[in-house]
Length: 141
Image 1 (cartoon, rainbow, N blue to C red):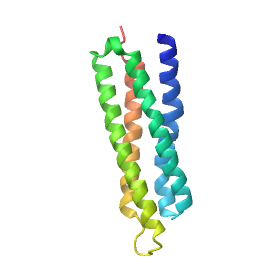
Image 2: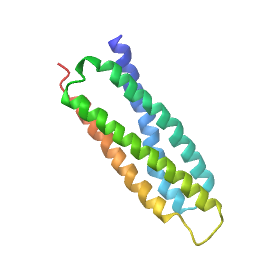
Image 3: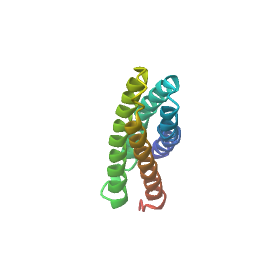
């Protein structure tokens, strides 16, 4: 059972966190290009893979249930929750950017959303990398 949970945890990490990171990191480029159709696609991609990313947390929680007192797991879970909150903020900013750019108003170009999405996406990526390091070098024994 442990092997199955490990495979599911790693599989969800690869196939959910990678695409959600790519979608959020490329969003500012398409906001600057004012390409609303691609922004809608990136928003949908962000939502789908953000929901799938919950599987990473759940399978990791089930996998490490007997080691939950270990600092590396507590830190990793806390960082994951922080990244999830940042992902919710990015999702909100994507919606706002789509709404602003759909208005056809040349004065508003969603610069606030562009900067915030870029910054939060970078922070999320660093959080994923810190969690990866903690999982690889954490002591499960």
